[in-house]
Amino acid sequence: MPFDGIVTRAVTNELSNLLVPGKITKIHQPSETEVIMTIRSQGKNQVLLLSIHPTYSRIHNTKNTFHNPSEAPMFCMVLRKHLSGAILESIKQDGMERIITFSVKSRNEIGDISSKELVLELMGKHSNLILVDNEKGHIIDSLKHVSMAHNRYRTILPGSEYVIPPKQDKLNPLETDGDTFIRKLDFNAGKLDTQIVKLFTGFSPVIAKEIISRANLGSDEIYKENFIQIQEQISLHQYVPAIYQGKKEEFHVIPLTSFKGAKKEFPTVNEMLDRFYSGKAERDRVKQQAKDLFRFIQNERDKNERKLKKHERTLQKAANAEKYQKLGELLTANMHLVKQGDTTISVVDYYDPDQNEITIELNPNKTPSENAQSFFKTYSKLKTSKAKVEEEIKKTNEETAYFDQILQQIEVAGVEDIEEIREELREEGYLKKQSQGKRKNKQHTPKPEEYISSDGITILVGKNNKQNEYLTMKLAHRDELWFHTKDIPGSHVIIRGKEPSEETILEAAQLAAYFSKSQSSSSVPVDYTKVRHVKKPNGSKPGFVIYENQKTVYVTPEKSVVEKLKK
Image 1 (tube, rainbow, N blue to C red):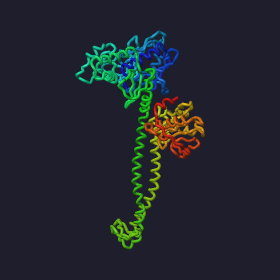
Image 2: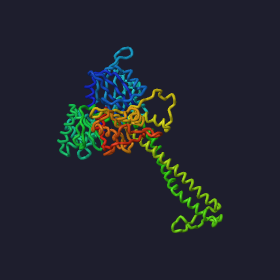
Image 3: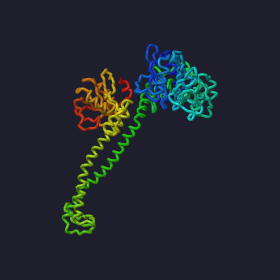
Image 4: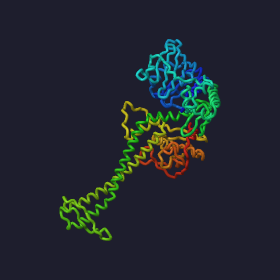
């Protein structure tokens, strides 16, 4: 994912045109790596995301919604103190580096105008967001604190002098002519793309490979022409923001002519970045929040798998119960032939049509009568255990299906959905209940996710069992259509309307298939019926229902369709 110096230049230029001058009206910190600022500019509110995520560090305007904590983190409070109501005067990139500086002016506690800088350093796991007092040159605070023990070159702590990251010994591609570009390359050494990345600031491997691909092993002059062509596109801000679909999804603002997969272009760099990162960053946030939950459910499921194997062994043994009854009856019929101390006895098997002899093994320490009683007791025990084990296998299979459903729901859950899943597991006794002090007094009403069909009809999707039950059993009307993947863990889906079109039915089926365990499959069977035909059995697990009078459609889930339908 090449959020390189070129993309940084493109998004900085776009944000500067959109946000400067602007007034910072709101500041939130939804997670420990993300800050959201609402900036009023040109008569519009623009929502800016600044992220120092180790994998998804980035900056762009966003249309996504974020769940903010009830209490703002300390860094967010510091930003609010110094930047709320401040005027954004400029947004600048440091050369072709992935460092962006926001210059702002505001009034301090006594009403004097003060100048601050908010510096975003996009450097992978070393990314940071730093608030600097421009007049004194020291750090007010940062999203990530770095002591001298972790970085000998510079300290990033409140009160420390702000020092920019060490410069790399690279050339600025915008200040390099074509002849210098050719002179710096060693064509005999090979690996030209690696050489280009090491030579020029802001060039990622994707762009280096693009230059090599365009040159197509041509002469020095052709390499020079392609370098100058890309240089001009960057210098003149002639961007073509696009996402490229392949084995690995990529994006860039320079056209990647070497890419053979499908391509989706966007009108702005911000829209491209928002589209590319939104799902990935959300999934990562959920993954971090639900990591312990996923591990716990997986462990419980694994325990059930081991339990099932044990039950199956017991069941196989119980299948021989009739054999012990037969041995007991044959021994009783031939009791007069047995003496205490005998280890075996051969008798006629009168259950066998051919009347063959059968050898019965005996316990020499028991009397003949006690040996017979032992066979009958084993028969009785195995017969009883068979009924119990079959009941246990049924319960274990139901619980395993429930765990599969929870695991699937974690896979498609949003940040807000995870807490509802935790709450459900507490109610079911799988997780320890919260103490009275931590428990919320207000009863939370589940909120199924809302989508709009091509016909303008609302489609609701339950993302966990609480939402599924609320949606199907309380919110939906009896004559509305209910959807669910056939014999596959997934979401409950409802079309709000009594006579939807065929297109809306197929779109609802798409949503049911997408938010299921078969999200990556093709031709997924989706059942649908009226809500009146959906019932919840007494004592069943949350989210479990039975239904009848269903029809089945087959759809292949497509992310693009789901995104198009999202409200």
